[in-house]
Length: 265
Image (cartoon, rainbow, N blue to C red):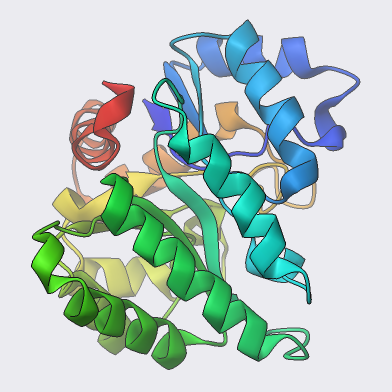
């Protein structure tokens, strides 16, 4: 089982990180993928991956909520890491758009996202995309970059992280054949419409598991710090939704994850 989106390098885990990792392994998690947030998180993320080879895998990217006036110089520093022929990054992420709380830096977010989509195409890496209150803008940017990059002949792939949209939005996202939907703890929430939407229009073959820990803990841990071991609760919810076994969810979603993140194979 793979947790395709967890921030185990976050300070929320400083007191018991080794125990959190042990619980993940005990729960049957054999790989965790770590999206980056900012320049400040690169070092702790890479350190965690070096200490846990073949279990923790890093991504590189600037989270939209961390985009400021200096976004271009920040991305310059990050791209230097991609220039290194022996870099270990398996994806470009966590990138995207977030206008939920504030759109002060909306223009900068769009520019930063467009550049990081270009990275994905240029370096042949999948995207880990975060989007809140910006669905149309996000799709417009991706489509524009695909159109502009046709001569590169590269297929863009990735994950639309923490999907929680409508059926129409799900269908639109799945029209990008190289992408999966990341499903996490929200699918277990009592008032969530996500189970119905998944049954209606999202095949299990287009889903990857995630926690987004330390955030969005699933039931029965809701309200507590999330951790990778709890991805099993997400998988159990999906087994109920799709009327299949936990082993089937594990097998299919693991295959999906490794299809997208092939550098983690």
